[in-house]
Amino acid sequence: MVRYFLAALLLLAVGASGQRLDSLTLSKMRLNFIVPDMPAFKSLGAGPSNLLRPSTPMPIAVALSEFFQGDKFVIPRAFALEVAPAQLLHASNTVFQLDRQYKQYRTWHSFRVSLGSARDTALGVNARKLALGFRINLVNKGDMATDRQALRQIIDALGQLRLETRAIRKAFAASHIGDIKAWALEANPSDSALVRAAALIDQVPDWDYYLHQKIKTDTVWAQAYEQFVYTSKAPEFDAWFAGFKKAYKQENWNADKLDIALAIMGASRDSLLGNIRFAQAGWWSTYALRTGKNGQTLIGINAGIAADTALKKNAAHYFSISVPVRYVFGTNRVKGFGECQYQYRGRYAEHHSFINLGAEFNPVDGLWLNVYGGVDHNYTAGKGSFVTNLDIKITLPEKFNLF
Amino acid sequence: MKEVYFKPDGGALRAKAIFPHSSIAPVNYEIILREAGSNNTISLLQGDNLNPEDDVANLPFTPDLLNGRRVILDATYVGLNPALHNGYRIRLEIWQDNACLGFVEETGELTGKGQYTIMFIRLVAR
Image (cartoon, rainbow over all chains, first blue to last red; front, side, top):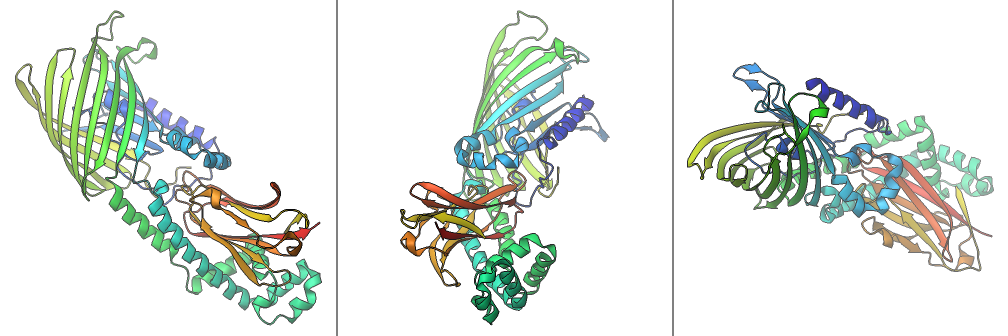
């Protein structure tokens, strides 16, 4: 199964590069909030909590269940891959069209497809579960790209950059007035008397046009200009923007979000796709609500229909529903949380509660760990058990070049 | 320099700027009108790309006084996420009597750092 997973990743990379993504570079501008939970992964039953955590969409993300037992590494019991097709398949020549239809594009931009697989030892030694999930983001506050207040601050800083850049260009042109006059004479001989008599750069009509053309088309002049900017008092916009982005991320990890998702899962006694039978369909919706400066409350619902067995055609189907509520407190990279979940399991007509404590960590760029443990109490049977879970979620680091 | 021909006895001229969407690259710009044969300028419009419909400047003189003047678009911008939107296109158009007479356009790659462009159109009476 690991081979299939690696093959899928390879195909994805080849396919994406075939869509003219070869010139893309992942920038410092991407905000690496926590990787959202994937419906395909949740559908596999990889953990006792049925909360589907919303977050800012990532182009590619991978989720793994824990892959060590004691002191040994083992193949993860479950894993899933989620892709955002619009983010991956975007080609630069469609930007203009997408600009005009931004509202529609924004929804499409958040659409993600996930594919997950897990072992199913209850069904057989070689049994597998395969899940396909879809999700869309309906509310995504805290996204700098659509936050008009943040955009206004950036635009104001760009205004200052424009004035500073204009002054630097003028100073550069003044220090090369002889060259500028020669370019002006070459381009427009009818102005020769005016240009020859010019003692100051402002007396050369359209000096800024000639300079701009030269910098754009001549690498020697482009380098000379860059060197001039470097040695003069360079605009501080880039440093300001890096700091602004960092502060924005710190202040907006807990902004309001609403995701809805659907997943369909099949199971097979072996690894043959042809033997897969319907096992479960699930639907999720989670609202993340900013709660104070450093907190976030997640209110979710998960409903689904599951077959009692994937081994026969006339399986009975049962309804289940979960209502988890989680309170998260901390910073973007380290958070603790407490969660309560009510669950009705139709197959056994059981009512459960799951009360747990956990944490989300971002130890290195692109890697997120989600660990929790708590008591799953079965009210119908009158007994409880202690359950722990570790999910590992990986996305492209902020400073990683994929293509 | 790009020349755009207009009717001196036609309707008023307008300069329209088109930018990437503000969610892709916020822009701060100024549209300037420069006198014929000199660098004396009038600022026509300073703005941003938050509302694309207001990125239009009416030229303040009757068309017969515009021959030889240059319309200049001076803009700074920054790509918010070049990993997803790395291409940009900025265009300056001249309109008269509900018709686009001509334009100058710049395409390029967003770097994620502050970027600058200046675009020129020379108005020529025909």
